Length: 299
Image 1: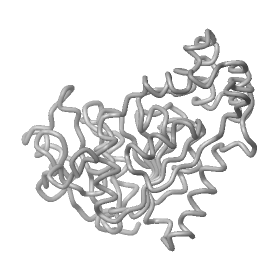
Image 2 (image 1 turned 60 degrees about the horizontal axis):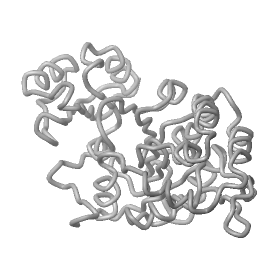
Image 3 (image 1 turned 120 degrees about the vertical axis):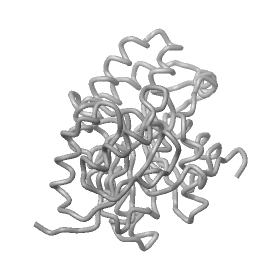
């Protein structure tokens, strides 16, 4: 077994269970680490130690604190990333944009049920997307604008993108959803680029079709490797964030893959899982302190 320098990031949702000094000390003793280093009072700290990575990850998975905090274990070296790829729906925004759009058409329940099964990996994503978009045939373009007005940012989204960009990282929004929304979200949060599917319109009316080729889980993984080449990066310098089965290949291929309040199929396989924290957890994982955070409203 190869021993290495390891960092364990402990992240709390203070509304559920604050991370007190006592709990941080108990965790430090449980893992046999150095004393806690604080990233944010009652929210996040890190523990440093030298051990075998998988041994520590197994200990974290069975920790008595696992039901209260997000516990992420990784090598110390290279934790600060240079490329962020993140999903949009239920990740950067709270909504599922297609479901919101469907609620304006009378097909909300049918489309939401298909979305849920697709994100759990029970349905092929391409097939499910085509089936759902067909139901939108005849919907006026104004419904897209009305849907955009309902979109809510996930807590921590502004800080995540602004802080990483302020520290020289490239931030990419990539979604199996639609360019109508990713373009606007990308402009709002100052993403460097965005990728998504395009809904086809004719005379201001949705045709019920999308432009080929469809961006799916394999496209996300391919985009990751293309961006690594474009920006002359190492695979280890990347971090990917998502919530559903469609994000799995991208998350498993990134230097650090983060399942964010994710479906079980993704949570079981992702190297890091955020169940309690918001998107600022992705910054704490990289060693940023709360005092380092930027915000696109004031940065």
